[in-house]
Every structure is written in structure tokens, then in C-alpha cells.
Length: 88
Image (cartoon, rainbow, N blue to C red; front, side, top):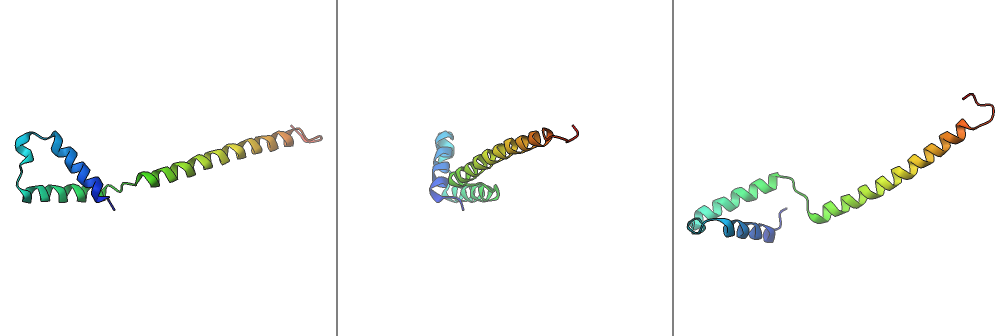
């Protein structure tokens, strides 16, 4: 769900950049524009900053674990290649 405060800030920002005559749109038209923008944002499947930060942290931990496992696999492979009596 999109934060209503975020939507109000978005609409305020849009109003700030519009020419003065357009900002005096009839209230009905403003409501329709808000509804259209809200519907478009709802379909965009956006995530919150908090959700993004959580997933970024999970990804960082996963990358660290993969790096450790890659080193471990390389060490085990080297150990296997250096075993006496093993064809190389």
C-alpha cells in the first residue's frame, strides 16, 4: 500500500512545477488526476525503502557466504589434486 503522506507530497511537488493557471484546476479534475496517479503507482509494484534495505542486507550476507564457500571449494580441490597417488 502506498503511504498517503507520500502521495500528498508527490501531488504537492507536481503542483509546484505546473504553470499557475493549471494549478487552479477544478477540484473534480484534481480528484480524477489523483485517482489515476494512485492507480498507476499501485500497479507499479513498488517496494518501501525498508523492504529494499532488508533485501540489500540479505543479498550482502549471501554474497559473503558464497565468497567463503568458493574459497573453501578451491582449497578442497587443491587438496584433492595434491593427494599422493592421485593421477593429476
